[in-house]
Image (cartoon, rainbow, N blue to C red):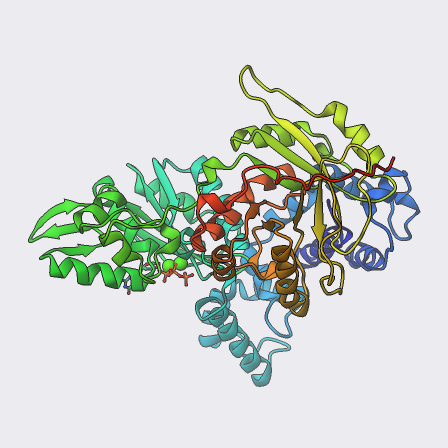
Length: 551
Ligand code: DGT
Ligand code: CA
Ligand code: CA
């Protein structure tokens, strides 16, 4: 669901962009004022729009109302996208510098002629700011430090959550596939290993026309800086500050490069030692005996040449997996292709995804046979389910059948009976609460613990208690794509699996396209070495008991 905060952020951005473009004060201020109004609005915009009362919000005139409507119904705003194209992304990046707002960033752009942090740093070092009105020695020194911090923030240590990196990478791959002649395009590095945080993205491609691929790469929207440029490798910095390496490779060595650049570094070091013992040499071009390449086209080939069974990327951390592969005892991890359902999705109130059809299409594309729509267990739950059920697709195409189920979500401690039509219950931690001392309320419907996401670190830490509670009751536990907000990172998944917890992977979608995020949830389960037997492929079983229905 498009939140007020999203629209607020968009208006702030429009205000900044108009300011950067030197637009008139009143126009800029109109957006900023509207953003402030939205910040203090007590009700979701979607609801106000549904009542047709957007124009009653103070400071929202016709033009802004139309923009809010467009965004709510399409999730996009054409006006914003046009503005973005008029301002080089590097100019907006300049506003992250201390003491630099839209006005100053515009002056750097127009008066000094720089288009981003790198060029500004060069201009500062070349003394081109000296003598410019408003730039004394102190101000210049402040800029120099800010620029260093901006660069350092990217090179040294600023890692981002797995899901964010995954989404950036997916968009990048989509764009490059559409604009460049690539036969193969994959992401290696820590993202392929499903590490919980990702430093930079490592893209590998095969193409007969590398020059065209690099040209597209260097013309990507959101590019802030070109860090290096060559015939086989280039590195760029993308907004909002993530580095991306792209390598274009020969098919003969693609598997070796994929293996090498997937890492981890410690895993690779172990492989090299092993190779040496066998009189082989392994690098990003292949496995070699003297000068002869004995493997390189596929990863399996590389591992086989070293006498190893294939090792899934997610466990390549040199934590015993190489020894296990040598003994032919690599654990069998859960596979995404065996997943049949996602039981935790919420339909937005408006827009295309308010209907089930786009969800069904995506779900079938993912190979699901079942989809679970969750509604809050309140007075309207039965009615919402009743309204949606007749539109639920049961078949699509000749062979495939998709079954849509309905579940209710409620607090773990709450004794609420389920409404008519509900088929399962998602129990979530209560806000600010600790898990109940008692068992989860007995119920005939299948139940699981989910919705573990929290923003506040203390609340995230408290999730452990809830998982323990679920474990006592043998309730399955949902695994979503944001470990930093649930506390369920691969390490805890591993130890929970050892204690017999069964998991329900979910993409936690509120838009149909987000169903694809299941890749991240499954990646985490795999990184936790969770086997197929510990993942539920459909609804858990309910505890048969007298059923109280509420209508
Ligand atoms: P990140 O980007 O910090 O999240 O982590 P990675 O693992 O993606 O690391 P990155 O991007 O520096 O390098 C990608 C892979 O390339 C890394 O996992 C293993 C390989 N690699 C990079 N540098 C070296 C190295 O010096 N020695 C070896 N053996 N492998 C390396
Ligand atoms: Ca990386
Ligand atoms: Ca890298």
